[in-house]
Each structure stands twice: as C-alpha cells, then as structure tokens.
Image 1 (cartoon, rainbow, N blue to C red):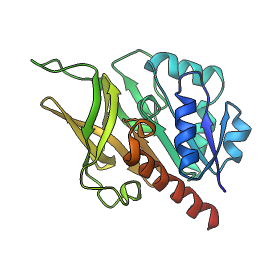
Image 2: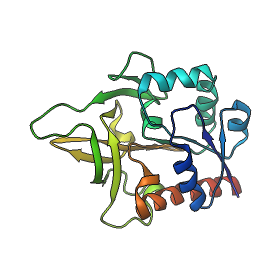
Image 3: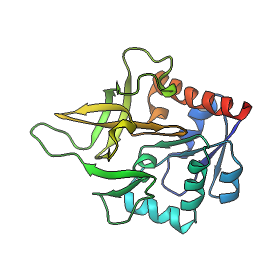
Image 4: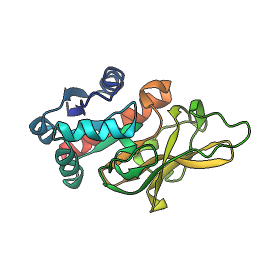
Length: 211
C-alpha cells in the first residue's frame, strides 16, 4: 500500500484529509520531516487559513525545498485549498512570496451586488480537462464544497482542470499538470464525489508505485 506524506505545517485540516485518503485506500503519514517527504510515494499539502502565515510556517520548518523537489521529481502531489494557493508566486491576501511552483497570482473575489464573500458551500464543477484522471467515474452532477475568499489565477490557463462560477465570476477550481494536482475545494468535505476524487488520486499513486 502506498505511503502518502501529509505535510504538517500547522495550517492544515490534517485529520479530515488523512481520513479521506485512508478511506480511498492509502496509508498516510503526517509529517514535517524533509526525509519522510522525500521517502514517501506521494505528497499531499492541505491548508486552511491565510497565505502569509502558511508560507512562513513552511519556510520555518524548511519544507519549501522538499516540496519543490518532490514535484520536480515527478512524485504524485495533491494540494488542497490553501495548499493550492501557496504553490503560486504571490497573493493579494499578503506580502510574502509564494512557492512559485505555478506562475500566477492568488486574487480576491471582486465585490458585486448580491455576491457573498467568502464563497462558501456547495457548487458545481465545470471540467476543463474532462479526461484528467482526477475526474474518473464522477457523475454529471459534480457538486463539491468550497470555503474561500481568494482564488488562483494561473498565467497558463491550460493548467486549469476545472472551474467554478461564483456570482458573475468564473474562476479556477482545480489545476492539473503531469504529477501536480491541486484543488481549491475540500474533497474531504465533499461527500462521495470528494471521496471518488481522492480515490482517483490514490489510484494514480498506486499505478506509479507499480511502474
């Protein structure tokens, strides 16, 4: 059974993320050890909170380079919520530089009449990479759970694997490129659809381990 390192930097919903991955058939290891991240079969970067404290905590624990190295080495990688945003170069939420793995900026939703910020609750995914392995076996109604006031804006829109509409704004809900996948929504809070997405990720990890 593959071992998935779940990165602990005091900003993640670790218990829920681990529970979802374990239901999907993975063995998880919550860790802030660069050696354990390097030795794992895959890496998950969860996150709840604000951009600046997140990157500060990662750097204080010397986890920035291990994360970048895992991605560069082709290891399956899944970012969740804030774990997606800190992969970007910068955020309108703060002043700290992000990890810069993905070119682009994290932006705040524009205010408009009747728009609720944060974007909170269930919403429908529009798949922009419909053949991505992340979306295998999903039903036509793809309602997932969001909680965020900021969204990612990649320079290369081909990285978008899914979008979501909030008010009049259509924004990135997920990105995918090779081994790197990341979600703005919370799969661990998204019932059977979220569990299927996590199962799809775990299946990719298992397939890569067997190669």
